Image (cartoon, rainbow, N blue to C red; front, side, top):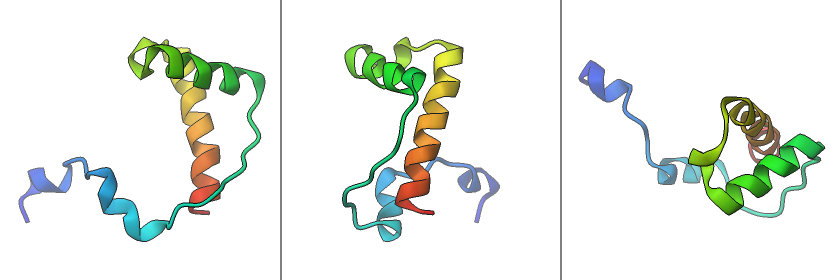
Length: 68
């Protein structure tokens, strides 16, 4: 395997073996909820560096429910 292939981003479909989908409940704080709404309205490219950190927190919570 070439070294440059090792660092390539995988498509989302490569994670299908980790989950079958379903319903997941997470508790968001006010900042996380606001960032989720902003991203829905304006897209992820519109968030600030601080909001990106908050987004990572939100995604981390969701990831822990999907694949603990």
